[in-house]
Image (tube, rainbow, N blue to C red; front, side):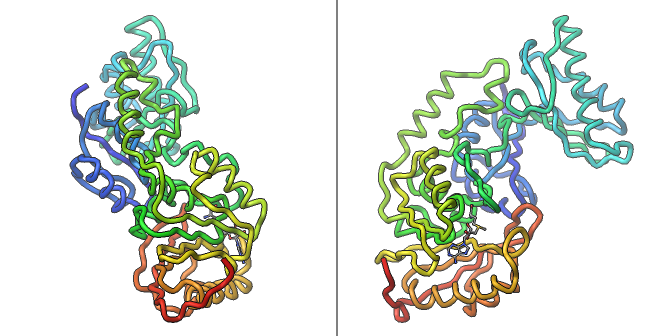
Length: 385
Ligand SMILES: C[S@@+](CC[C@H](N)C(=O)[O-])C[C@H]1O[C@@H](n2cnc3c(N)ncnc32)[C@H](O)[C@@H]1O
């Protein structure tokens, strides 16, 4: 398949990190929007992106773009695409969409029209049509339709890349894997020094840090992608790409990764998730209050994602927690760079330290910040370790 436009989507706020990743993988960055980065490539390139990208959600390969004022024009133009070249006759397809067209009230209607165009064409060509439905675990087609401009993509990821497959036990208020990877990228940590993650919850930040530190491609954790359900899927090339990714991985880390939470069930879930991700041997888990977390010498990053009152926790008691984090930073974390990921900037003020940097993120619809604090060695007091 020749080169075409490739759109890698992401959660709001993550695009700058995704752009950097795409560029470091050797792809040109054509443009960046709030929720995606555009590059170019072939289906083979899409496989590579699915394997290596940490912060993106879906790798979409443009099939065609055309004008459509209404659903009938969508049906007509989508029916001109040579679907039989991509979709197996006995396959299963799912159409997803983002629609802002005045004639369409429910985007599911656009999905159905696009799906009809595909299966009707295949019926005409082969006397047989693929099944269709909402499952995203096989061939997925993504439709972007704004006013009368339509772009039809093959979603080569299928299930979003945030579903790495290791988080079997999400607990409450977990952070998406792709967001956690972007947060670690924003700290600048690449494997040197320690990572300390009190309040680890289901362990997403610690696990993503371990994967980054090892240079372990996140796609190695998954066995199913949308591209595997396209005609002409190059299985030998996929095997080669995986071997290349494995060869690039490190076996050990320079520093230590420590994850703790006062909730024993959270720590058990985090350990289980780390085991599924294959990084449990690299993370030291502890059940303890965040103030008791051990901080090995040598510095590094200490990163906390406390509750921020939107989804769990009560504001008044959280004020105490945030104040306590400030004291913890001052008294125990000298020589480290401190980070707090929060969706509540009022609570963040209770930390009582001046943030050196504020990186905007979104956790779902909630606008968040990753706040960075420089913590000087002088004030460090030894605590339990
Ligand atoms: C928002 S969740 C963290 C979610 C995590 N980033 C994830 O991806 O699963 C906050 C966590 O802080 C923990 N926590 C709250 N107060 C704590 C304290 N005083 N000491 C240790 N952990 C605490 C909670 O048990 C909860 O697991």
